[in-house]
Image (cartoon, rainbow, N blue to C red; front, side, top):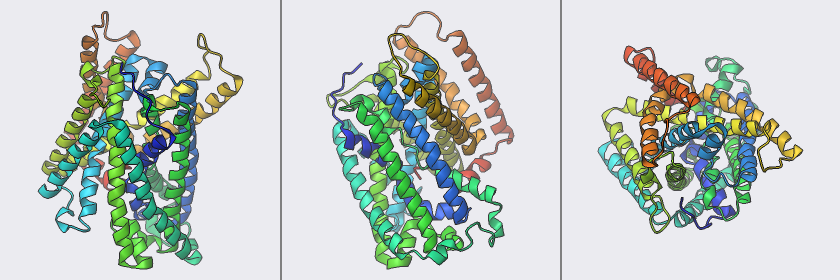
Length: 493
């Protein structure tokens, strides 16, 4: 296992959290939130999301404070709580989800550049694919030069993208109209929106992806100068992102009504600001979108390389993933991730519907590691480990936060779509081959799976075969996935 120098401080960790959560999607919130809901359900959605994500953020804080030795975060919590193979699946699913999902950065970046250079507006023509490919390998090169340097660039870009957002928020708070804000609060004058419950579900699907990346500091906790900073950075990032998200989506209703907001093209925030101050506002926010995407892309490149490298260090990924260069960057993991992104980006030219479906399926995979982390905290409330003295206060906190975060984690999986989880079993089944390669690489003897793990593996294979059968027979057609994705794109879009 590589003994990293502790190089990333609180602000670097906080920037990773904010940078990975606040991507290009924040600039699309006004239109996305108003697309299926009036203001009232939007307010309820942010309250529910805020409470649920608080418990999830606090779960990561409690785990990082209580278990600082588990410095691989997402992987190590699942492995420590539920065994080696479950830990592998957590790391495998998280890595694929993040790696494939990162392709959305390339597509959205080209579309944002299309505001200034129309040739990129399509997002998936050959010029856009070439431009996106260049940025994929540029990000690879940046992180290859060292996580500390890449973390610094991410911190700078995080500050840079927050400036136009804060300018937008200040103007928005100054210009919004109370009468417009309170008009048709529950959408009763717009029957097409449906009931409050329908509107709430539509809105929750948008807020669902807003906080993916909240675990950013946990993933690179092995590089933190002070392990206590990991939990603090996670909560800091959560509170900051919640205030930004909620303010932008709520107060935009005070500039335009629901119907007008819903018609805005992306990035809708730029058109809201344009309605207030003129064309320079749209120019400024589109520049902000570009900076935001680049910053989030750096953060997610760091995260996606750290997860398989940490898993390899624990012997559950093939040894090659654990290779580091002189700058302490996991070069093989970086290259493997970039190749996955490159292949997915090229595939988007050949079959756009399948491309969107793949990203949708991968997006749902990231929620399972969240639920496993919450379940591990809940487990800690009921067990007494040898050599440890858990206080009564910690057990109570673990019980409350673990139970609430576990329920919220399963709610996220349900809200994202159980059919996506079913289709993701195909990728989890393929992971068995990778897990076996790691077993061989590390010279393990005996059986590959424990009896319980063997049952899990068999169930995954059966579900994967069933999912393939339903896909071929049309029971779960690709068009259904794409319809959902196009209306409720994953967070990083």
